[in-house]
Length: 265
Image (cartoon, rainbow, N blue to C red; front, side):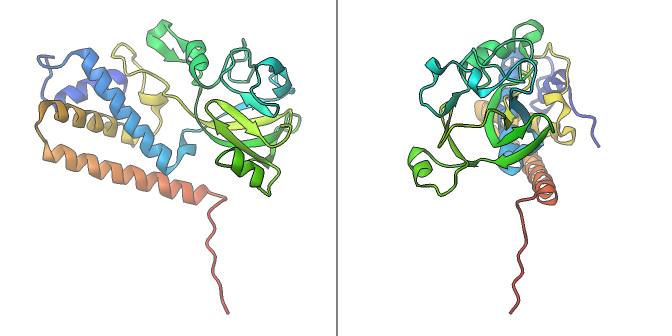
């Protein structure tokens, strides 16, 4: 299996593919932006195929240190009685054990981006919520899974008691949420594609498909250059298919939600 690419290696490979090794036509800043566009598309493939491959967790529980409970959020900032605003800077969660920080939205970006070291996100905040469960902090296990609904009207009509919906950065519940919750989420990108960051792309997640980030970025350059590289596009399409197949098969093999039903009469 491939060892993956560092961000500088991705820059160099991009220049090889667009035939600009000496930076005659493209600046380092432009390469960074193209690679970030490519990374966004790469992440979207994962999001659509198997987001749990990227997943991380965040606890809201009185059993963590420091206290990260739902009641710890000041009632004055709650837009609705049964809600939890993930964009409030005073929220305490297990994502930030040293201090209080928001975990989603503009406040999260302000609090979590560390300017030292080229803007590395040391603990990425939430991009997309995947699942929400009640949580037993003593036994360290999940109990009940919340069912996500489309919005307030769907929640009112729902026959299920454990429901929630997300509006902006606010979680709305149909009753008082449990004090102990665990949230599975898809994080924002771990790193910018800054050439000075000598780290693997996305903490070396799926290293065998790192080249696809570069190929997707090179497609952006083709738009600017108005020149199509058919060989590159064919290779990109092939790798997109291989990555999608890999993620889909992995999800089905490990899934508890996918059941094959055979009916006999």
